[in-house]
Image (cartoon, rainbow over all chains, first blue to last red; front, side, top):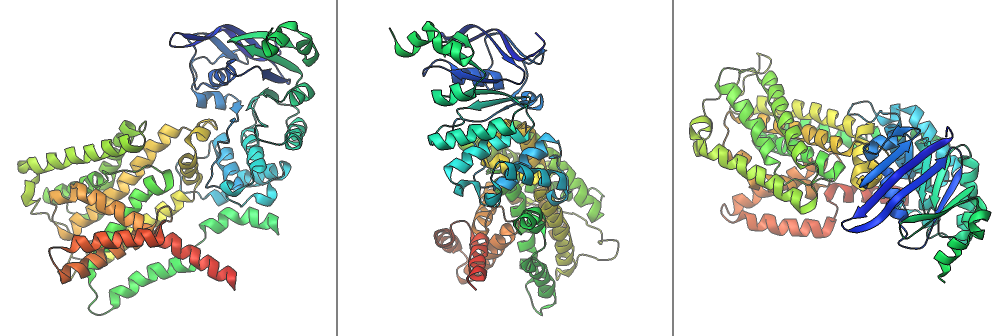
Length: 247
Length: 326
């Protein structure tokens, strides 16, 4: 399958005796917007942590663009184009959005090694950071410390930082968490427009957002992937209804 | 307008402020003031440099160390041994000492980079104590409590002999401190400095931006240690004497106090803290040579209560308010 960008092969995960995934075979197609849904405790967070390398699987493999990345560190995965955002804002409270952007871009462009060359002279990164902030509607708060930004803006910055890294695969862990419905819709609209080319995998609880924006949906429950397909297929799947609503 | 401000932001951050010129000018003026206490002023510069070295770790990277005197001491003993065993040229001696201490710092960074919080404090403190004990016991190498004697330091540039009034020492230390401060200033204004601050704010996020966080901690330790080593070497060269007290844990605590009262992550906080601490210690010791630590302690409490983030950040904040208020 040439158009598969991220794939897990018989991925197995357990915490002590507690098995989370027995044999997870998940695949993400290039360019799609793929939602992962499931009730609490379904293993969604564990899945994100396995993919980003925070956790190591007990067995099985993880492939990115046909390359085995099972043993790669989180940083190596980022450099291979696998980027994530966090469910709970994980930003730089004392830096402003412009500085945060330049931090990210200097990492991406590998210019953050010790040197005496002033940040001010890295005009490429600064200009790009400004443009990104403009596209994400953060330009007016570019010089305000992140900790003083309204929550909605922080949520956008959370995504913008990952997006700045030019990801091949963008993993969004509940990007709309804590946002109002209107803000959530606005964020996803923005993403659809800005990240049209990017493969996006997102975890989301708001079913309206899921069915509106996902090309395909995977349903996790009890450490298994119980269903996968287009939003309509998944919605019609009796297994899914049972998992969510009980008998 | 907004666009201009944003494009200029980093340039503005690294531009020289008027008070910065004033700061360095003051040190030149102090040299020419009749009867100024050059010995005390030299001490302030050396302690200030030492505090700035800790600031690279604590202020910019958010890593506390309770064992920084280890690096100060390694620098001092390196310079002392060089002078004692024939390498008397001071500038190369300073560079060699910085190199040795920098390597020790990289090693220390490699050991402690996975640690946080209290564990980190304990390990840095522990290593400091081990070194202190080693220095004190190895009487045949270090002279033990008697200190390292017979250190010979040649005239600076072959011309300026270290005199008993401390004039050469003062100028020599001032020039070295100025150059090192310029280098540290450039480093913290570089993308590496910004990256250190990013890791201070959120290590988790830095990892997910692909940053080699552990490597950066090791490098920061190396840089910080090298600067501390230069401070130690300056003290050894200008006094031509090294004692185990230079490695003592109380020195680690004192430098931490100076940095905190002066203010962290503002580059000059260490110098301000050192000046306040040492001048007051001088005054209190003159009043009562035995119990001066009481007054220093009291002062610490008062300063921290009044200034919270340290003297310099508080003054900067007041000044900004004042200017915006006009």
